[in-house]
Amino acid sequence: MVRETPEQLIAVVRLRKDKSWVLPKGKLKPGEDALAGARREVMEETGYDVSIEGFLGSMSHAEGGKLKVVQFWRMRAAGEPARKLMDDVRAVKWLPLQQAVDTLTRPHEKAFLMSVIQAALQAAEPSAREAAAEPAAPPVPDDGGLPKPNRFFEAIRAWLRRLAA
Image (cartoon, rainbow, N blue to C red; front, top):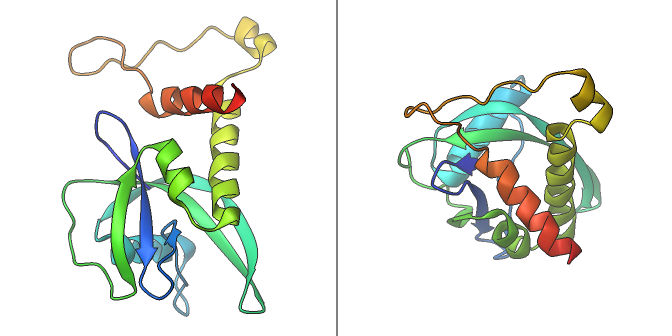
């Protein structure tokens, strides 16, 4: 989940029971669809109402002797928190990408966040053949009529360059 600021920030939550920092997620209620459950869980864990922008991917891991499958969605939080945090969550931090990865406690969540970022970069950068075959779409103007940079992908590229160095 991201929040619009001059730099897009990612939400991480601190669980009360084991004090770990994790990505917001939860369990579906009986009969609840994935999108409704994702919105509800993020609202409960972060306090923010969100809009869902797209599917990021799935992750599975063992927890308590059971296999747990988690779906992640790209969400955008708007405004101020709409409710108090649920009792299971101690705190929410909104962090730049690298800090979010560094803060996460569970290795499988760190790996997932990094893989999602790499996939997003590959999707954002067409191959040289595709770029030559199709003219680039004009940039979407902001309120001032100037091209608006995609700060999220710029931050990802900078982060990956730092990782490779």
